[in-house]
Image (cartoon, rainbow, N blue to C red; front, side):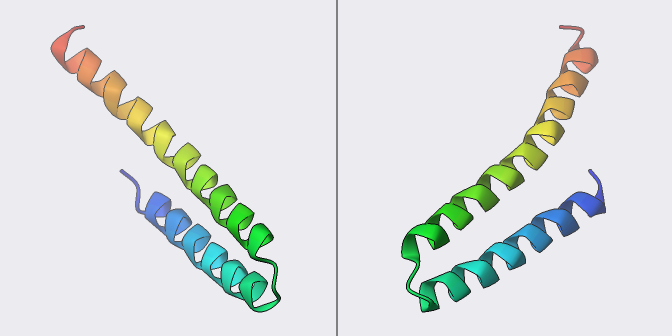
Length: 64
């Protein structure tokens, strides 16, 4: 696993947290929730690539 992935996830988390707070203070709770969900989807796409790599490594390890 790469350290860059952790930095990307942290950056997305910080950005989403700041946007959430700004939108909530502005009275835009719906957009704040959508921003949070978009951040979650972005992080999941980053993590899914790594999980796919893990499964392919396990497959080759056990000759499946």
